[in-house]
Image (cartoon, rainbow, N blue to C red; front, side, top):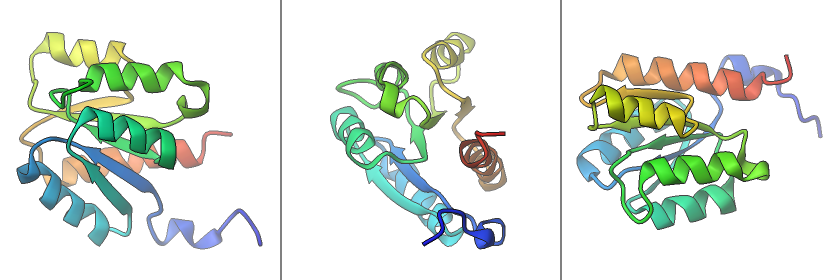
Length: 139
């Protein structure tokens, strides 16, 4: 019926894709996000991640730069260059922690970049902020 749902402030809403080849990151992160009320799915290859982004239009992608075929930087750039996907929020969550890697991630069009290891509160703060931006983008 109505597109706006007033209860969205009381319960987190958002569809999140975790694109990471390491289950040691993916499984606990998926659990954390689902416990916070988000709809979450995962991809362990770049090809699968890109296909899910195109097919399912997640609100937020948590992207490991080192995912392969294509890598995270290429995925981010492709999403930014595709008009119907350009509003998708992308947060790199990566073990690549050098300044040059972070700069490359941001230059490819990411909305943020955090490095592993990260705290639950750090990741949740970023997720909430990026989803608020995505949901309130007409301000």
